[in-house]
Length: 439
Image (cartoon, rainbow, N blue to C red; front, side, top):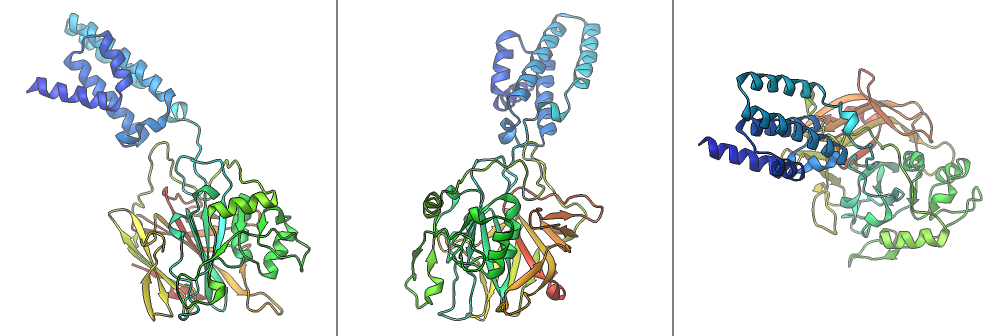
């Protein structure tokens, strides 16, 4: 029985740390005590990294070298012990305790932090972030953009009012290569541009509001503006590349424009705009991918259902799925007179997010003859609700200027920790706070 137990432990250790163990096994005879010590080191290493076994390789070669040395030392001590007396065994125990005390701090063997700026996962690209403006109208058969295409591939989805109570999306992707067909496209608005500006993202849209053009001019952002217009502030126009598709429906022409990663790359090349960028920080503060850490929201209030009201006709709701830890998205459709699952037409699947962030802000019409274009008061900051893992945390958000990133803080002043994955961000009018609820 003991022999079978030992064989199972050895096989487990080999599965987790094949290369180090092969070297040690080839050098020394393994005793029962050494097997237990080796398996203990394996378990300790997993605890230190907070990783599952399948993710242990993410800690890098420096950790592997350190573990190899520890395994060799442990095997050497165990072999000496097999030929010695009980006194030698006691001495070996003392040596093992000493070795444990010498284990390096996590920072000494973890690789440099290099996270994906939008999801917090290990970085997979050196490309420039791309934000695409996507239509969300749903008033009638002809005035209907849903279901949209390409939203499920976005790493960050931003929703906010634009005018007349209508909301619009900015689908944000890690780079152009990760963008499938996406749309229907619509014109740019500065409340989305201001969120992207600190990241030097490529903002892709068809036309823009006058305030958006002004922001591009004042902050010298025109070099990254595609689909802009020149009359108001002499900003250069970089024609976007897109295609039309009515999808076989009786829908208004303005809701038929789509683009793709291939077309965006072509437009950027035409305009002489680079699509590479190095990021040394992340959009939000994420749990560290190197250790497998998570924000389990211990002690936070339950939030299995989230209801967000942007206006009378634009309401978004989420339901938590505890199996995949995702919040599934639905929206009210005025055309249908009911809530409908928000699906990506390319996949037919409902959108799901690891994190939800609802930021309340002062939102009002721009003064003058603006046509009801909405202005978001970012400078004043406001109240925020962070939702993940079936729970909610109340805090505040700040954005000191268009060139400063959005930051989210807990009640104690610490920056809220997001779980790695996709995020939905809602910028909601303070006037709708009383209609926001969760349970």
